[in-house]
Amino acid sequence: MSGVAVDGAATGTESPAGKRKFQVTLIKPSHYDKDGYVIQWWKAWIPSNSLAALYGLVLDAEARRALGPDVEIEIDAYDEMNILLPFNDIIARHKAAEVDGEGSGGPGSGGLVCLVGVQSNQYPRALAMARRFRAAGLQVAIGGFHVSGCLSMLPGVHESLQEALDLGCSLFAGEAEEHLDRVLNDALHGRLEPIYNTMAQLPDLQGAVTPFLPQTLVRRYDGLISSFDAGRGCPFQCSFCTIINVQGRKSRYRSADDVEKLIRANHAQGITHYFITDDNFARNKNWEAIFDRMAELRAEGIDIRFLIQVDVLVHKIPNFIEKAKKAGCTSVFVGLESINPANLKEMKKNQNKITEYRKMFQQWRAQQVITYAGFIMGLPNDTPESVKRDLEIIQREVPVDMIEISILTPLPGSEDHQTLYKQGTWMDPDLNKYDLECVTFEHPLMSREELQQAYWDAWDHYYSMEHAETLMRRAIADGIKPVRIWQHLLQIYGAMRYERVHPQQCGYFRRRVRSERRPELPRENALVFYPKNIARALRNYAGMGIYAWRLHRLRRRLEADPAAKDYTDEALAPVLDHGEDEELEMYHVNQAAKAAVAKAKAEAEARERHQVRRATNAAE
Image 1: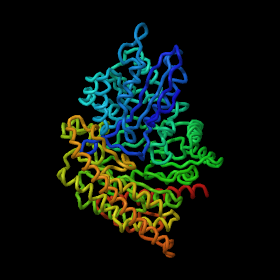
Image 2 (image 1 turned 30 degrees about the vertical axis):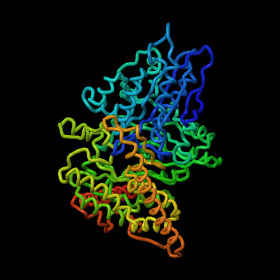
Image 3 (image 1 turned 45 degrees about the horizontal axis):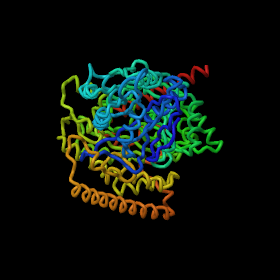
Image 4 (image 1 turned 135 degrees about the horizontal axis):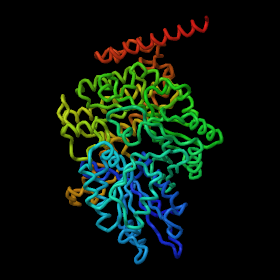
């Protein structure tokens, strides 16, 4: 069973005499920054659910003695975002588990290194790790959205996957539930297959093993936060999305009993905060039973707080928002993406209705839930001017708190990538750039440099000090503590402004390790590297400190203002019964917007006529 390593990773204990040991090392790779250094932090912000899912599955395999009664599985696990990997120690543990003679699977069969949840931007780092482990004779398997996305959407074997196969790695596509035992047994006997493609065999999650991370790993994140998926799959067809082509469009969900089990297990470790990673929890068909059970647990005195992701029509589901609040929801991420219906159409995000945006966000605010929204730029009709205009409209008319801006990126596994791949259109060959922050394709109206600069400018424009004041004033008016806005501004905008990394891959106190650089880049001279990075750290944290102080002074001034609770503006103004009748710039910004509003009006009138007919028929 699992124990604790002094470096903070979760690791196995010594095997009893007479038993064979099989070492499983789970690693969630990080990503290289623009200078080629691994992005690592003292504490990362967002836990890896892939790591939690695999950890839970390996624990279950050990408990069941899945490799036989005389084989004990030992686990060590690392999220590279918050720890410097001890490569030599990992290799030594695997070598110590190897056996000779009858029953041996040959060199390397003492264990398996699993690089888990590897996204496209993390794939170059994963390959660099794989080379080091393979050079030492260890067995390596790579899974995650890049492998699964390429095998599900592209013909043959993509060149990036072939590179891993040429190293002698195994690739795993799909979800590990119901398949991990076979992979571990194959590794034990030294007969790993090159590719395990289980994409056509997505598991039922009812009664499945639940994600779990030990406290030794959780404490390396921001606060005591862990993650789990209450369901998988999304019914929509967004062209930029990889989820629907990897996890499918059918809702598969965990039972309320399973969610209670994992929450109680985490509560026993003192873990109270969660990132529920369902791509769209609003379309989890078991959402109500799960929320009700979580509310019951809170009534018992179990502290539960979580962030979920939903779509813009979530407020149409009766009681969803109210029950989310009772269950412990403190923050919600909404897939807004754009206020321009022409852009939404390009992304096949037909479920987004701009006439519903204000009502939806206002209902979340009524429950004192902090709102995030995604905003994608780089669509075919975008220009620096149109992006700035759209952001200004959001600032004035949409009562959202934080937005996370990304550049449209053709991620392998998405329809966008598949289309460009089949057309032979140029896409940047460096997968490290597929992090939603870099330009990876040719835009019809902007050069790569113009689009990249427009991206950085967009962050600065939305998160101006003037808008920070507006966000705090709105929070006070809606009964939300402004210190929560202060904290989120520091995390979201601070990550981009001072660390130049997306908030989803940020953390506290960046560390750069001179030896952990992309293999194709030279190691910097120590006399250059250390002074440069000390200066960078001082500059970044001085800037962050000044920004935090300015926000603090702003917050204290607004908290002392007796009129602050009476604040209102266009975004907070109550939505009319017919929101499509409001006079908003968002509704008139272009012909696509006007057409969307006209369609919403026609649909509302049709619903009213239908209701009148039903009432008339009932009266008769």
